[in-house]
Image (cartoon, rainbow, N blue to C red):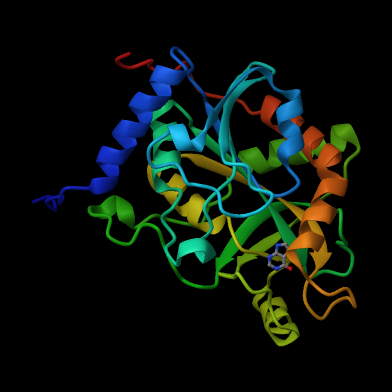
Length: 288
Ligand code: HPA
């Protein structure tokens, strides 16, 4: 006997968001969803035919509260790929809850997005991966052990995470970076809840755990996307050496200024990576 599903408030919200998006952008069928972290906004300069919709017009989309995170959705094309680019995300540290990206990501999945490309700013634990470096996320460590899937029903909630970051997408990203002559590191991203930065002792411990970079985002969105059946690719922009690994005091201002300095390079690589993503068949437009 299958598990009965209790009424899901999120499902209703996703429906509302889909209706609102279809009304604002009729006929637009994005195939790749992108979440922009600090420093990655330059990708929108490469988009053709972009429509911008403030999150405030989309039910269930997060109201931005962090400087450097814009709070609008861009719909347009990168090469032949129709994309939905989220300029701004909800972080766990803003509210203490980790499901702030559930409605937007499920809405974009319902519209036809089969791939989620995530980007973030992160601190480096590796001396050979300094500020300005770009890192392909090979895997993650969910240090807080929090999940936006708590409360979901059915066996789908037990999502396998062995292949959280899609192997073929990673191979494609590496090939694009090589073609462009961009050095792309690869490593494990460790999610810290924040909003405080880490202590040097924490960073030493995380190094022992196998982390290459630390940041305060990305993992909850990966869990939501994998639960929905989307393939995920994630890229980190290293804005600083992690606590205790350099004399520079950590601050959000430092993250933003390092992110700005790398923005053109990061945006160019991201645009090229997305253009190269192979997609399946045409999505069903669904009821208009
Ligand atoms: N720690 C956590 N999050 C971050 C960092 C860091 O050093 N840099 C950018 N985001």
